[in-house]
Length: 278
Image 1 (cartoon, rainbow, N blue to C red):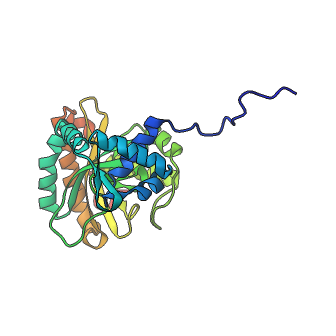
Image 2: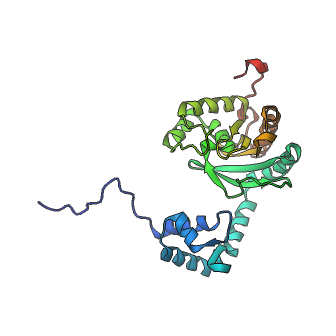
Image 3: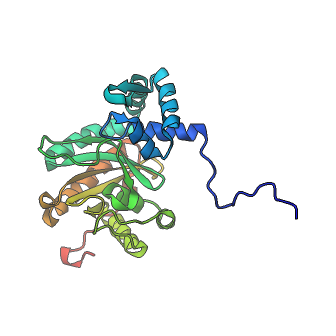
């Protein structure tokens, strides 16, 4: 019998190309806690140490990586410069920064701006009060849409069918004992968030941390990000969330209006008596 030329299973993932490998090394390089050892970057990416070393050496030659003490590497000056230029050029971030500072001052909690990338949330900016503890979600931090207040806020502003498609395509794994992973329960939560204009996250992503966030929209009514506040659970009880929710919604609305979003499209406020709200 003639042997098939291509015997690779159609279900087998294609091999990673050099550009994809380089991007994975770059992403691991800028994770919090740096500078990072070569072996740590290899574990994060699943690549061999020689492969990682080759990419890091090339990045260092072009200023995207920089050797540090103990055989570690950090982000290089050229990479930092490109990131700063990109963030400076962001209209949404320019509008969000003073809003975040005001929100942090008024709530006493970490205020943040985040955007969506596929099924993930990426935190870009935050205004943090001076405290003895710090939140895990630093600028550059990524987490899943369904586990974060920012992600739930952005999903709630999408058309229901688009939000459902994101949830159906996601691997809904619990990150804490409180993470909601049932699609029907998540859809109900998104409906409530859409009605009141902000989403609540109760220890879904990190134990003892709660957050409330609202979507930021552009002139076309599309979701471009989310603004929120987060804090330790004992400082963000139900009464606090009832106060912070409208504040966050107003902050996101301010940025959205600055981007040209029509005010009526920014969400409805549930004006029913408290006992009749969902």
